[in-house]
Image 1 (tube, one colour):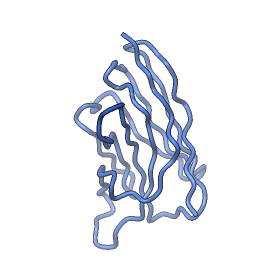
Image 2 (tube, rainbow, N blue to C red):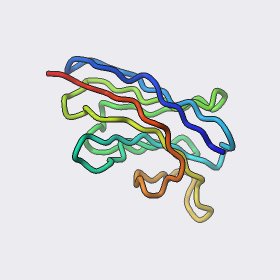
Image 3 (cartoon, one colour):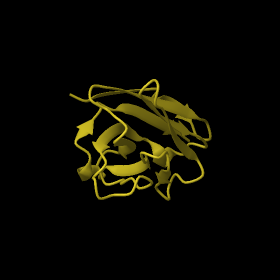
Length: 129
């Protein structure tokens, strides 16, 4: 059973940085890839970033150039470095994992939330102006 536990959220002022972590355990192997999602009150869940099995990242336009996704495979930990935070980044942030479909490329990852079966409980990020 895959378990994901996020940490690192908090309240910061606009322009500051935060780093989120997601500790994975259970049956996670090299054929899994992971992503970060966020959901603000009254809004749909948004795919922020994902990292493919070969390490290739993909970002939403809204965070491109400000956020960096990375992973430490030895520690089974996923990270999201968030810089130049804006009030519109305020949301609950979730990490998620899925097995790469056999017909997809190693460099590809999806940021569609419905494709991910494994989710963490979320960590709140609040950015004030």
